[in-house]
Length: 165
Length: 165
DNA sequence: GAATGTTATGTTATATTATAATAGTATCGT
DNA sequence: ACGATACTATTATAATATAACATAACATTC
Image (cartoon, rainbow over the protein chains, first blue to last red):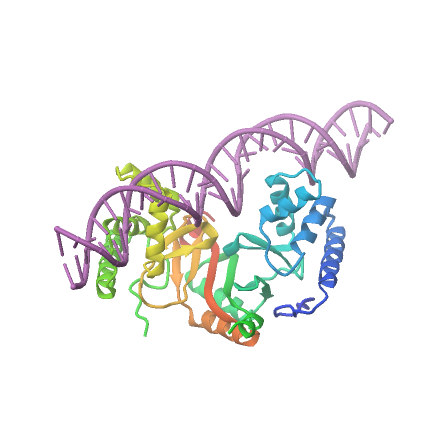
């Protein structure tokens, strides 16, 4: 069912990241058009900046970049755009880092798990059905209704492990 | 193997919470004595305050309470105690709430998952081997070394669901 | 195409959470 | 009692996030 555009792994070191960005923006535009949402210049730019790489980005980093570009921006400027992007599944929030990262399959209601390298900062988004079902099972046992899942695994990715043993 | 003192569920509404607190403090004292750690008055009091109920507590809330008790305290006072308690597994941090909650089985190296009710604020700590192994499996596939897990499920607990349908 | 409603953004101020840096105090082992 | 170590106090500030309100852009309907 869920055909993820990005594979369930860490992005290769040598991948052409412009492709990622372009794809993400195209998807976002397609999605917003389809849903009747307004992907304004600001929101589009924030999304693009979040997608600058595969590392979660902090709100104030984004703010700084917007300011440097000459745009008048204050914290709410950024947070509101982030809220919009979050609400429509175009980005995810990484709670443990107070940061935001692009989502590779907007619209799709999915429960994401993040593996985050503490060395290079890159994050991989997974959607592991086993984890999902285990949580669902626990919830059922507890009589608990799940609203939001925060599943963030920090550690060291394969590349960084090999680089500095 | 792991014999948890608190069951893997939400605490009953009518349980005698002083028992929880007393037990937690006793366990902490036992553990610190055994490990040669110093559970100072401040640390003990912070632990007690964290255990005041089964809801995660914010650092500044603790600070306020300490201040009201006449103790001279500033943010670092609290955060250092919290760091100590965290480091030795006497409390857990709930990242998604920026808050802290008592741990019912200190010392035991366990991967905790939290189910947090957005209505009453209570949190239940689980240690589900299925979730654990699923994550381990993903990590293996990615060549990822796990350091820290943040697994926090927000929603509505059974009691709150029944109370306000 | 002006009036009106709606959504998005700008602006100011401030709340909330967390840490850096340094000095002082208690505690422990000898 | 003494020196080493671990803990705490104090001040200042960093980093993250939101409240409250004003203005601007856009879109509809008349």
